[in-house]
Length: 323
Image (cartoon, rainbow, N blue to C red; front, side, top):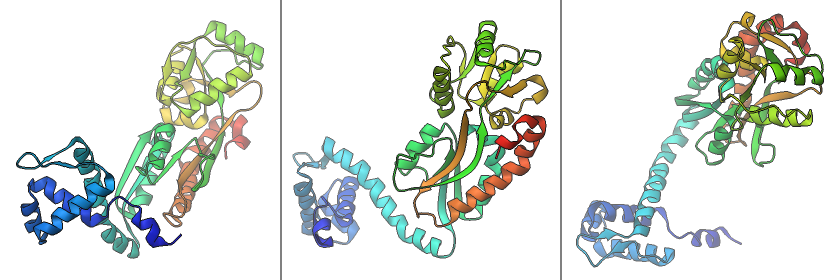
């Protein structure tokens, strides 16, 4: 199948969309033709061809000035975005040839916001004129990457079931117990169940990947902990433990992100089978050259100098598990 065959199957081309938008704005074929420096028959033919290919009427010609049909309104919204994107392509290509990008949009899981917002922004600012850093849950960032509303993200889901992506691991850390300062450390799963009879369990919400993994692990341990307080952010979980309101399962980096004095909480290994998470940079394959790989390296270095060494000193029992 040749390229020309595939192109002919598209219901429109950019010139037809440009003519359509001009008519939308002018509400007149003649006025649109004048604006585009075309003849009125040429514009009329472009609109007729567009309607024939899409098999819908885009304008109500029974009224003056011309009015859009509901289908035409949808076409206007989508066509505006397409034309705007098309007009930016040449500038973006020329800009990239000079060694810089016009815009990079990055997602950053909230448990790394404190540690990596600055390093990520600084790195990307050296490679693009405009940088957008969006903090939040990995699930929303994964969806935004697939819909091309993000160029890359750093989170706890490597999207291993999706093809066409590059993945660069940044750090792996264990899940651990968080307890109020004077609470007895549970050494076994049975001890953990006993702790749950005395203290409420502070949860990460099921909207977060961390929350999903913790709940899955609890089921493996046959622990059915009653519902209570749930939080999207590491701060909420850690703060409630520091206040003595309950215990939690979290991670060392989440503790650091919360920014709460480690002396106000007690950390300990999680009883039973180990549970870990890996923070990964995910991007669409080969779209940004070596930038994602280089950014992942910069993030590893930033984490080592900013929080990982401090965490290993504060929790020497996990020294070999935080890398």
